[in-house]
Each structure stands twice: as structure tokens, then as C-alpha cells.
Length: 89
Image (cartoon, rainbow, N blue to C red; front, side, top):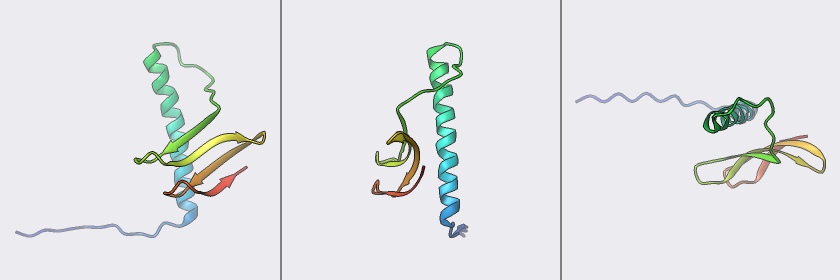
């Protein structure tokens, strides 16, 4: 018996990971609003409002968020321990 294992091992630059996470957050917000609209059976609302949006990993740790802090919008990304590693105001 012959087994072939193909692995794609790449080092992804920090900026690409941040950009990828930002895109993921955006798609999750869109998907969530669409799903909620479909579940309620009402017309799709033109506005989605919340005090904050967070993205959690499979363990429940917050890995990204979009919220207001000190009257300014903040988008942040966190490491696997939940510590903010970057944020944008």
C-alpha cells in the first residue's frame, strides 16, 4: 500500500493574516444579518445595529471585535489567549 501526503506549508505574513481576519469578520456580519432576517421571516432590514460585534474561536475566546470605545469605532484582533494584538481606530 502506498500513501501520498501532500502538505502546503507556507508562512503567511502578519498583514495578510490581519486582512484575512478582517474579511472574515465582514462576511460573518453579513451572514449573520442575512440569517437573522431569514429566520424572522420579515423583509431584510436596511440597517443592522448592535453595541458590539465579536468573533470567537472554537474555545469561546474572543479573537476579533468591532465596537465603540471612548466614543470612537475600534476594530481589533486578538491572539489565541484573547489578548489584543492589533487594533484600528
